[in-house]
Image (cartoon, rainbow, N blue to C red):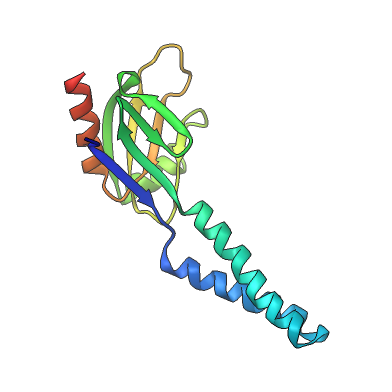
Length: 149
């Protein structure tokens, strides 16, 4: 049983922007005729949608004794205390409080995050900052796995 899984999807407004990118490409192709305009509309929208989807499809999971956040896989045994960040604290930890050595799965369109200390003495990474819509549930899942190990 997986105690936690979340997919961070891009907001709806980004999909509208993808369509607007397609319209802009179509306008650039306007001097070349109708067929290039249609190709620009479809192609521009498709490329923008692929970029939006790729950026907005990152997954966060707690599985097999590890926290998997995007490309990172961190054993729960190497994690320390977790701090739920809301509002101003979220902005502070992704700006002026941020450590350049930290692992940051940052999505600016998500207003909450979880900051988890990394306790592995061999790892120079001080903490992991993970944008999540459900920081309390993620912290609870990490604690559950840590207690069952």
